[in-house]
Image (cartoon, rainbow, N blue to C red; front, side, top):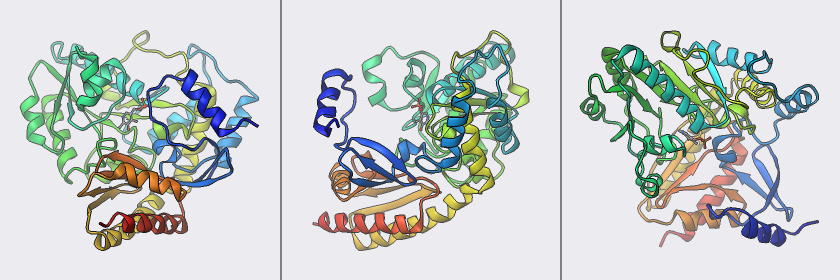
Length: 400
Ligand SMILES: *Cc1c(COP(=O)(O)O)cnc(C)c1O
């Protein structure tokens, strides 16, 4: 057996050093737990980065992948293939969008959405091409999505940025109206709740007011649901938490493939402007990834997992609020469904994440003073209690 030290030596010699990895070498997962190469188990409150919404190795997903692997893995989209169709139907039947294009990641999904927006601008708005996005957003790491992502850290080393994006403050409708230029702006792209930006929840009216403004100006209202989609914030799609809101364009990835690399951009019929030859992808809609996605989506819908996320999320937030009363440095607990963060008055996220790891809990330092939790949506209350007990111990050590 290869030892963990040997794996780490291979990583440092051969892998591009673009991330500071956490110590464990993880080799297996089951439900909310992962196991490392040394047999140690961890409660995974990162869920493969908000990907494993029905947990690691869900039998329905594993079975679908096994079954599909024995039939056909890949054909060009020039031919009909099957698993992508039931998945597209589940998305359309349970949302307000009408058409789906599958791709391989969140960044690609947003690229596709922006192509729809630019074509919309070309056809309907005298060549308008600019897309308004927000500060502290995250839309991916391609050349265009770095420009869309309103965080200097993702932009500074790669200037000049791709033209055609403007970043304005989040949760500020007026800022969008001010940035809008008739004949230049073609769309707004926004996260219903900002994930990587620190779990920022907008006011109840924010999305509806943007939508109304977009429709008034005939520009596209596009939601990046890569993180909030597939039940994460307590409804199958995040926008369903906000009354009266329906996106013209919606993007998905992360949990869509339940661990298989799968993204999608979706549109309402009226703005389904891409035509044959306008877009494509070799692997997009691949039989293996969409088989996994269809199996996972079926479980999410049939077992009503999003409402479970709502209920368990409220339970978890209640427990975290109790901790915040006990430990004065926790200044805020916020979240929706099972996308939850705590904010602290001290910049100690890194220390807390390392201490949690030592005690068998995986969590994310989303900012130096913020911790994010994104467990599988079918996490049990017992597992939440276990995580809260570990956090209480660590917070007690950090009280002074
Ligand atoms: C993760 C994320 C992306 C990027 O997805 P990738 O699959 O890493 O390209 C885009 N938007 C949001 C909201 C995300 O959370």
